[in-house]
Length: 236
Image (tube, rainbow, N blue to C red):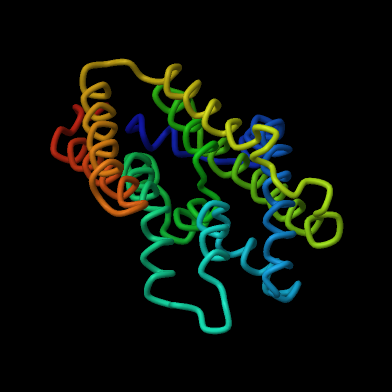
């Protein structure tokens, strides 16, 4: 059996393992959800719309950005562009997962990707590159993060005044440090180094010289393009 197809198997035990793996980080995610629930309520959104946004969008940074553009008349085109720019990294995430996800039926494939976020993607890729089955981390870990994001949003609607500014106590650094640790513990070869270097340099140049948030798009597309053109050898 193709090694990627073998690694793409998923069962309930894998999902539960992934859920437990991402559970510690999920508590910090809940704090951000709490802050979002409070901020959205202060902008005048109804409780139903706030919960629905967290459930369907499931992207904290872009949700906060949407609140900054919210008003009596929502500027739809700028809202779409801003959300796309912030979430453009998912293009690279999806491309990196394709060798494994291509072996799944479309319904299962896209159902799993609904719960993809930075943290569970990073842990899954690290495990995949070690030759382990990691869809459980991607799916189960995503369920853990999504569940605590929803819990935090709900708490923010009712008890949000407890943490009005998560950045003031350094919660904004948690995910960044986690992803850096995952990157340093991931695959180390010349191809991976070049992809990360191209993505990083491109993102920094865009950050300095191009419009706000465009560095996310540029970094994701440039790194993804290098990875797509420089394919690794197929594994049997």
